[in-house]
Length: 411
Image: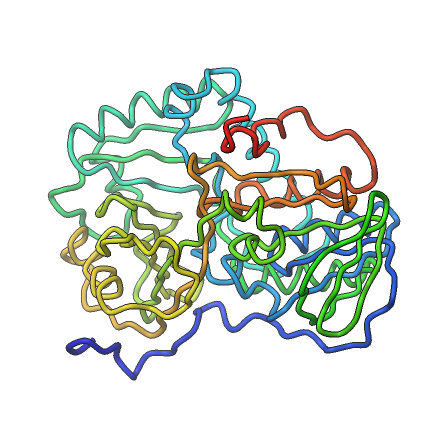
């Protein structure tokens, strides 16, 4: 990186590879179900509809996983974007337990689908190590680990020595210990998207490239107008996350696009065997070392005055990328030289309280969900199953009440 320009020697795109494109096939005039959005939530919703015997049509305007799904750090986490202890304080212990349990179910369900469908996505149930930087964070980590363990998620507090035993390079002086989350896994984001799309198509989902321009209709029948024609359906699921305002303005007002930035370093000897995080900046940093030794690292939004909030653009910026390059040398001074090979960015979608929204739109017989606040992978497989059930007229899980948009509207 030189001056105010990004290095031309790096690849401008995700290390996972560009998401798969879709064929511009002729659209039917009607479908048993329509799913709008080709990220992990849309794919999961269509997949579970197909498993229930419905033949859904999935519409994606760009490429599968072109949003946050195909541009993230490759984690299958547990918990929401709000730390469990903060959720306990905000919502009470019972509600926090319910949300944690839902994400644990998501993690188990994702693994079950990966294994059943034989998705070759480099799934690794290796856990996740969070580095504590200072005694205050170490003490807070002890309380968090205790709560999580009591509420069903296997979490260990580690001393500095124990933390060193889990890292293949010497720790810097800032690191005082860590938290080890045993239930978190790693995946190859691009391969997961492609594998789930292939499994969905095999079970009867039609995947098509089309831009949805508007939604109308009446109870019992939604009319989805696209640049390739009008499709009517008795069941509609909208899973567009950061683009919600373009189709469902009322729900979209509760969701703010947020740009997340990531880079990849060229392969180095094994140093990180688990997923990793550390609060180097207030928006937190995360990384993993892939099977070939590359390191995928994201975060550092806090170096920008606006924290990249309200930004849907996928162009990396000099300031955030420069800060990302300094994260690992600052934590691990003996790691050795690192060479950036890829730089990319992707649109996340945040809500005011960092919990997603899930809502029915009865006038169109539709359901929608979004606003996962950077933690969509901890919920989208199980919420895809729930959206499929709701679209089929079945009762939703009572825990979905925590995602009702009325909490944000004040009604």
